[in-house]
Image 1 (cartoon, rainbow over the protein chains, first blue to last red):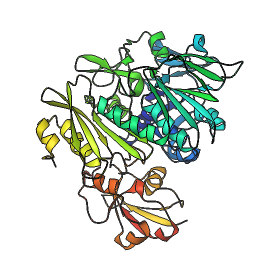
Image 2: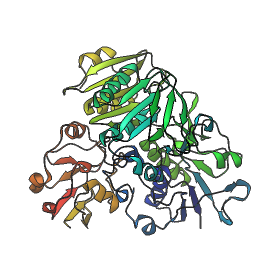
Image 3: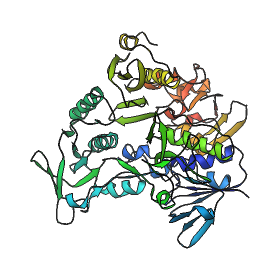
Image 4: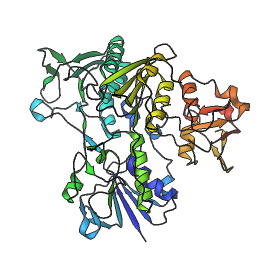
Length: 396
Length: 106
């Protein structure tokens, strides 16, 4: 019986397993995750789950009997230690498992602070898993002081969530502005004001020099010469694709596990999907860190394992919730040379449209679902409205 | 717990008991009802959990939010007066006996 083994029980891995069954695959499916939890949603971790508004059992992606009912052999708390491509098998501990097709859905790992700046002290956390939140949770409460390192989406979402529970939050961003890598200055400005109004102390162009304390972190020394007393620190300075197994197996890796348009790695019968996979986009190797991408790519790989021969065309979109603001992003803005602002129909709603010349690349829509949905359709269809129509409201 | 019946686009009925306090989308995912995609898992960010709700329960369900209404204008299947994003509808005991029709496209 044909056997598809999937390493990684996150969004991509679980979507892939489910899709195989939906496509009537009648062979064996093994889904292997190193965490003790069945596949769960990650986006709420930095939002409702962090603040205790959502219980753990509501994070599950599927009902408790889903995997058994579909004959998906779900192995949790299991860490794959080696792939042996020449023998079509994987090893975990002393156990060995033969596969016909192998899918790497290993995800990504947050970057930690180096030990030299105090990164080994207690009460310093990254946030990626339920386990991470369980470690952070006891430190959260009114009057506690948190330092957040990194003003990307995770850092800002965590800042908003903690602020709403009464934590005194300081956020430092080394670059000259928050969201500097991922958004235009206008979007940064919107979220800077939002956080400032709610009482988050937001320091831009300020680096972390060192974290100090005896065994646990007590204070942070910053590059502007100031010193901040802290009870705990959350580090949100990006992730690295989890490629250790792939590299050791000799697969091509460049900013993630290299896959072709259909999701094949350089290894025979080995596929990859989700945060760990790098795909070709406009001539460069790109990783897309988003839930919908993980689902879409994984489902395409599932179909291709069954012979569909289908190219995957990413249609990236993202969202972020901070305080009562919903940011929805369509497209990828890399390479833009200007942005056009569009006022929304409702008070406080607006959107920023990214253009390269006349070509629409992406949109950040802030409390403006209409702009987001309109833009998403245009981008998915490869159509570009004129910047003037965007600005003056001539678009639907 | 109230019983809700999902009806797929092909007309297949799935009667399920629904835990109070959860969203109708969560119930659909938990019970593996086909056709409720829910890519954003309940953030009202994707409009892929669009369903047609039994008009008899409009009052019990509650009103459509502004953001939700904007998203509903762009669903893959046509918006109708009884359209809702199922992630925005909470299960309450007065929804017992409600039917939820799933559109052919998300």
